[in-house]
Image (cartoon, rainbow, N blue to C red; front, side, top):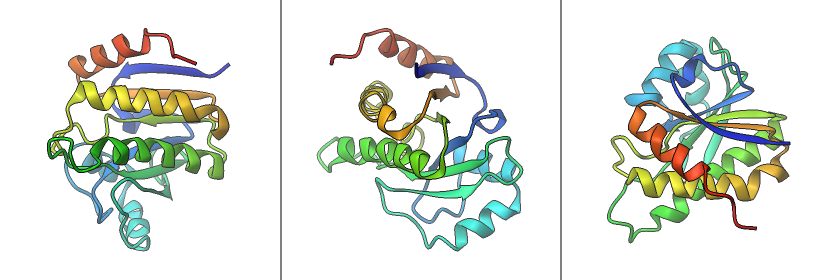
Amino acid sequence: MAQIEAIQGDITQLSVDAIVNAANSSLLGGGGVDGAIHDAAGPELLDACRKLGGCATGAAKATPGFRLPAKWVFHAVGPVWDGGNRNEDRLLASCYQQCLELAREYGAHSIAFPAISTGVYRFPPDRAANIAIRTVRAHFEASGVEQVQFVCFNFETFQIYERLLSIPAIA
């Protein structure tokens, strides 16, 4: 039985098969979770990302985890919030779905997601969490993933995920 849960903590410290990086389209590092993952993984991650040639919004690409406890890093480029009229919801959902497809491709049975696009990209946290949970619930079984963790950097985000995860999925 698959497990989906919210935790509060540091995604770079998790011993899971894959962690998701809330990356920018260059994949060359940045602030927030992106910077933390690049720092923890070491300079090899930047070298690997340079070879990927960037990534489109709504898409994801994989690299090894290098110095991280995770085997893989899936770099997902979320949308910048612009009021909701530029396909932001669809693009954010695509990030989660693409990461689950990468999990299937790379044989990852456990995956940890940050709250993609909710930092400097300003996506409303409640809306983003709802999209994340709905998308993961709809697609994780086909991916072969057995454990999904939504890793929340702060308590407010953790509370949002806890509340939404307590609502049963509609079949």
